[in-house]
Image 1 (spheres, helix red, strand yellow):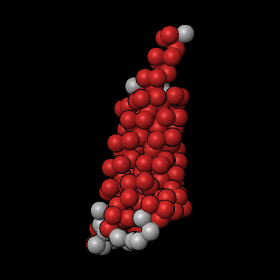
Image 2 (cartoon, helix red, strand yellow):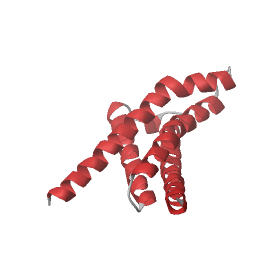
Image 3 (cartoon, helix red, strand yellow):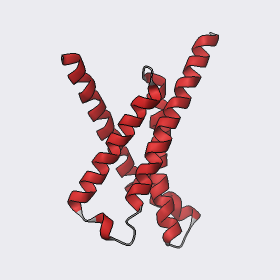
Length: 136
């Protein structure tokens, strides 16, 4: 019983940490990167901020998770990414009615990016780890 509870708590902690990294990259890092690429604000800039906000933490953290986690990596990583998205959408819904804004699609786009690229990076890293261990 305690093993299952510990495993659930570990997934919750990982999902919260991934959410914190996504939020921090969206607020502090993605706008500066997009500003270098697109000096004028617009819909394309908002779309790039949302995409980079999910992509920048998804790739390095997904690779790290794939190198450390046991099999099946992709399914576990998908659960963590979905958990992080649930936390993000829930907290955003409590703060403001984001779905009623003109840019309602920003949070779902960020979550979609996270849900696609975090498990993909974890899966790729796990495959590389197995290939390198198998050849050694």
